[in-house]
Image (cartoon, rainbow, N blue to C red):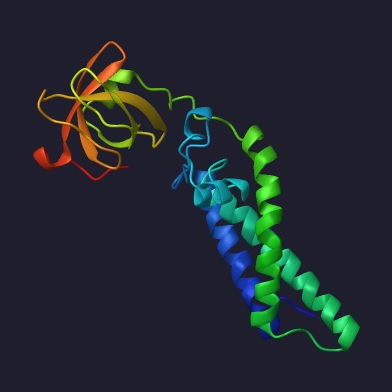
Length: 207
């Protein structure tokens, strides 16, 4: 049984895509971070969908690394499944059915492996940023209502895509921001940021 047989084609394609992603990630040309804010600060506001994705390993490692691991397991499980089906019944499964089974099995396996892989991956030493570099960036109120003298919690991402949670008050004393509102951080005093509503400024899209 060869990898290029029609019934193994989904797994051959997966291996080819895995190799491409592996080379891209290795060379550092692409670094997509599926950031679900799984640190202690985000546990309060994480929804069920984010919790499920975190359980599957998304957010613990870069998305490209996750895909490389998933595609490797998908192809390996799929080819093994086809070999087993052929030895058991004399014929492999239809490619779509084998792909469905292999995909369903590869997802939780990838999630289990993502934890140890995330611990051994080298950390980007340049990702630490000064708090002042968050000024001028877009943020989103995550909970509470921000009023003058009464800050609310907001999420902002730095130039490296890392999420930070900050306390925000409106720059204009008469303004207020509610959960879900997008804002722009314009100044900082100690640990409190002051922001204007996004509609009042036009900047690059939220990272």
